[in-house]
Length: 143
Image (cartoon, rainbow, N blue to C red; front, side):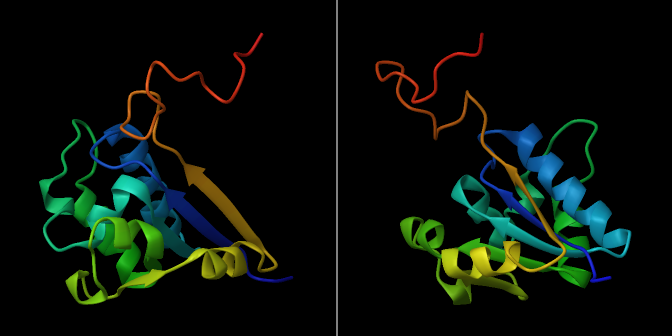
């Protein structure tokens, strides 16, 4: 039986703190449980690859994001999306030690590995990534 791994992609940051914190909490919990974890910071969460940004994040009744990130970095991997980094002018030298920048090909290779499970935490309806109110959603409402 092959080893199971967990790849977590989070698009939410300060714009959607609960979803953001959920992703980091699941990643840190999985690492603490001995699971191989790869945490992908995309969209607004890309900022948490920079020193001091996780320390500035706060959510009532939640573990400090900086502690969760440190836990993942201690035994897992953390990656900032290439395009997300470029759009935010984040360079490899700007990142916390141990955080890397990689693109879609690397993400696909990770999620297609035998035994891999992928989770995606998307920014919610009140986040900056939503379409403007004058543009209809690409998905019809559920009935």
